[in-house]
Length: 146
Image (tube, rainbow, N blue to C red):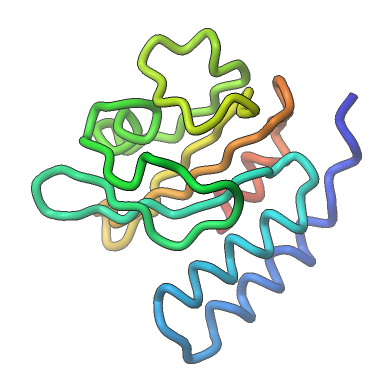
């Protein structure tokens, strides 16, 4: 059973504060990851993949277990599919996903949102959960607001 979703407004306020402070991009993205991971109980791994030339995603700031997937080609896995389509993907059960790159045996679900700037995808927000089917409309609303 899912726990009640946290106060989205508090999380968004904390993220807005983190973004408005003059720090490096990596520090800011790391702070966003920390806020999300600590603020939502079913977010077990939170990270950003940055778009690099040559249709490749490169792992940026993240919190959670380490991953071997530090570079992902467009089209490969859930992140690569989002990079190709520029459309969010919500996978409630990764075991049912044919084109899935496993980041660990505990991961049961994943959500990936493209980060757009001036109509162009510049990064992705990737969130893994150790719970099966944890993502709801509350998650979608929060992540779209970010």
